[in-house]
Image 1 (cartoon, rainbow, N blue to C red):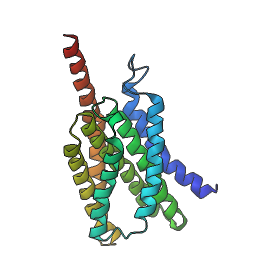
Image 2 (cartoon, rainbow, N blue to C red):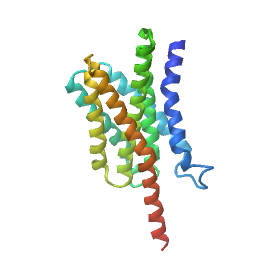
Image 3 (cartoon, rainbow, N blue to C red):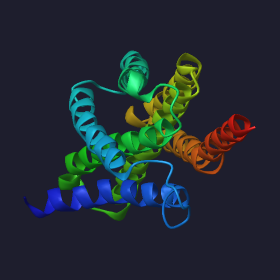
Image 4 (cartoon, one colour):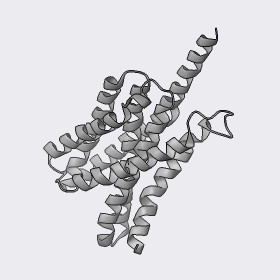
Length: 227
């Protein structure tokens, strides 16, 4: 493994793992006596996501994403793939599905980010280029983590299609905002900035609102069952 691959792996996978620790630390030991998820399954879903990320990025790289048609197709296909994997019977109507979905999405985002960095690293010769590629890499991590968690929460709540539609709209909006940037238009930097804010906002919503709401719903259900 040469230094470029090692650097790309560190810059792609490192932030995803940091986000996973930051978001999930309140739902496992020592913050809670009984963790809300199984660590082994969590890391298994992370690994599955990494494999899916390699496959989807490899396929995606064959298509010019500056074309609106391809951007729309992948904005539908990628969330649909997440739904197919997360909607298996094992995950349906289960509290821990949201956490495994987050790990799965972070896995996809990490190897997608790795691919973007590794593909570009040989031509990066100034600070501006490094800033752009790191921004795009973080976009992938935020995008896939937040949309996967949305879909996983829909599966956990028995409403997969509604949450899938929400995730799909987020992905469509992101891809459409990135088209001007990939086309090299002067105002593409502005839409890239808006796309970054969009996916960062959704990840913050997952961290601060969606996962806590899943836990609150589960605790209320447990309380009603005891009564």
